[in-house]
Image 1 (cartoon, rainbow, N blue to C red):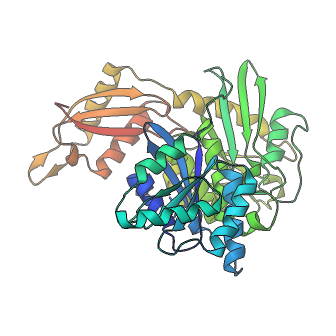
Image 2 (image 1 turned 30 degrees about the vertical axis):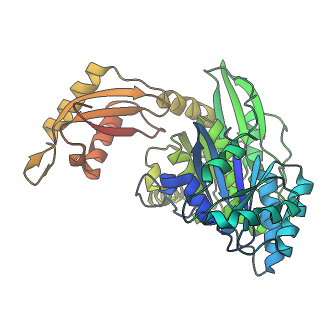
Length: 436
């Protein structure tokens, strides 16, 4: 699991500016497809070959509560989720009572804190840094978000606090599957149904599971690890008031999984939060199964399942490759169909196609649907090779990568899916100039 860095501080100290500096272009979503939600409170950053997640707590709005209370809530969430906290203050305004309030909270957390004094735009202001030792957070790092000054020294200090990676090694052929979804869609019940025992406490109160729980089991000779993210949102007013922020929990689980089960509530249908959660799994390149739970509680006729599936395909257009499994964790109805589906998409996620077969198939596809032209220049595909699995990734060597437009890229992906078994996994297509 990559370390998590949270940026905390009162309003207008430049948290979002620093967030954008650290994550750079990574904030942009790769695919412009319907249903992939755009707003971000966190993204990936990288420094000295160390990858990590960055949280911008400035985007957390908690009802109509007073500013100091909101700041306290934001700091509490950051303390809970982060490995390292960047505490930002404004170098032009000196130490304020609000800064001291947040500092006291962070000090009691025992989490590593790096103090960043923003808006130190010129050398003359560096003498003012000494005032910030009064916050008790150790050495203040003078930075300028607007000019990008001092960011390197700040990140050096941040990554020095990263925990060493001591995660237990899991066998390569073990399927690690994360159950993600909104609170109260039945994730814990589904874990119990899969395990055949009451391993996880089940409750009707959303957010009952306090933390992600890993459970190992073997079924029909296949080893599995279930990462139950029912703890995506903890109990309490803070987490209930910050629904969109709670997705960070599922991000952590997605990072460690190779198969993601996106669990929907069959009674409630699809809401925006579901699409957001699914979007993260898709962007991470994980194998995906869409699970519609609580199907026993839905009033049905012969068209109900067909209509629900149609809604899913409309709302989750970017997951057109993902199989859908309707079941009831409570009654165990159709639960036996889920693990074979999980095993199938896990195998497809790591499917490798022989190069000569791949190129024959692409040449046939081009003969069926000739490559596009742009300003009299036609796209020419010289050679195709698969360079990775998990997800399957293909490099197309072409005369001009700019000529491989989105629509033809989609055609090629569809032909790959029609020819080979890629159900349940995204496919990455990369265009490169022949000589590269």
